[in-house]
Image 1 (cartoon, helix red, strand yellow):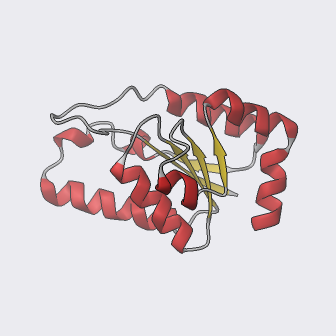
Image 2: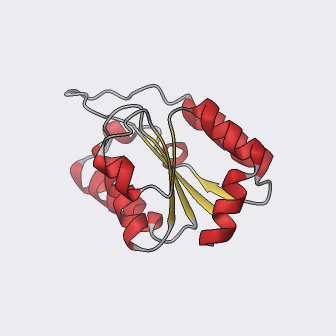
Length: 143
């Protein structure tokens, strides 16, 4: 099983700034515990200095990541607030028939509401779904 770890990076920052990225390590650890043979692609791991990219490199990386969302089995999207890049990744995965799992308090946001096969308000409820087997059953049903 292949996961793409989508999530807020720049969000609504107007300048060259990133939101805290500590959620990535926690989510990768949870996935490794519950799906030990899974491959998890974390776009931030290969692009820690992405804010310094010129437009050509940034465009190439962004479009490649969107493409990857249509090639993996599951897009796990973390959106504690609106994130245009994450929404585009979710959209592309959904259009390609991939499973989209979203962690976000934005339950009324249409991208979250209508593109997600499963939605969790926070990482703790996502973790509970992993422990209960709920997510494994979802992946079997849609896989």
